[in-house]
Length: 162
Image 1 (tube, rainbow, N blue to C red):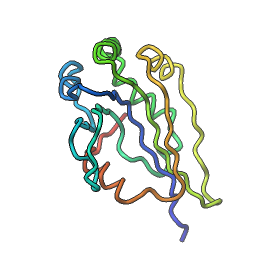
Image 2: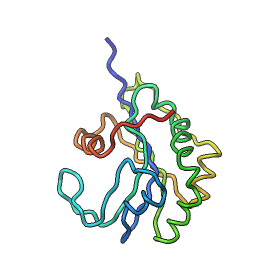
Image 3: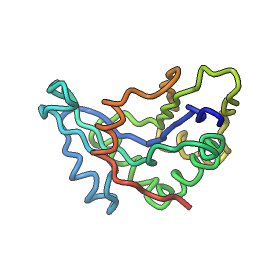
Image 4: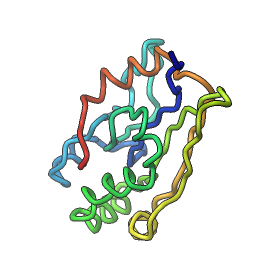
């Protein structure tokens, strides 16, 4: 029996900064985040105190064939945000927020496993440019940290993108 492919990923768009309420962002966009971090609250299992607030909208953890569709998954995520693109740009300016599209990728170290290609459509690049968002990557080797994955799952109920 073949060992499972350990590649996995998740993507999210985030608005991050100090002195803003993520709930106000949700209200303004009429869109519930997949995760919200509140400045001054405890985050993670270590009890660390957050020095910033963050509003995040993203995918569940993707495995198997979905990992090899990063460009399509990014398109699906951004399509949801396109109707509120101008409002996002206004909120970024009004609250002096940082915006980014984050790709968190765990790549198998097993040489028998294929690794995903990474690319973005003009639509994703155009959206990021329009709102002033950077595109960032967190890349890990091997299997995802179980504690981090448990925290992410607890804060991010499954969402299916079509």
